[in-house]
Image (cartoon, rainbow, N blue to C red; front, side, top):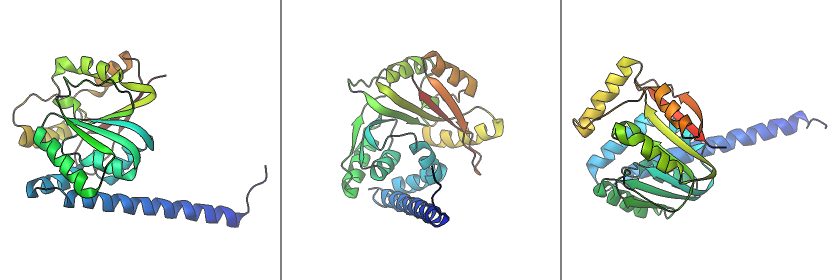
Length: 239
């Protein structure tokens, strides 16, 4: 097979770089719009902080594992910040967000309406009790596992796994227990948000072993950050 002329390769590389720049700019504008359309000043401030912690580069690194079209489930969606981002960046996706807090769900719905986002829907329900007969092409849980009761984690993950379509992907972004100083920094911030409810940051080997026992092929990716958060991404697929 002949190699394209250098000028064609240069043009193609330039087109790809330009497309990547446009997408990054679209992502920045999307995040700004999500924050701006939050119906409450305190929530707007919270949203800015969340997008600083899980900033655009992290969201895009996670989002690369989602299909551009299909059913996606966001468990523990909160105010819908990240589901609104992924729904806007992938308009052919249909995203369902589930969260225990009915007030947060209502704000997510209001923000979606203000943004004109129609491919994201929200359900107020405890993740531990939530049931749905649908299957999903991707399911994600961002900073949720460490808030779940330890005794319920295995059963919850097993139930969630049963809702994945063949070839689907489960994405878990959570906080590791090491290094200790990063874990303690994260714990201090979590305590500000949730008080003294039980929190457990799972050792990476323990959580990845649990996921493998459920039949997943698991790839573990530490997410390096200038901020002292021990982010870890678990990419889980079944054969």
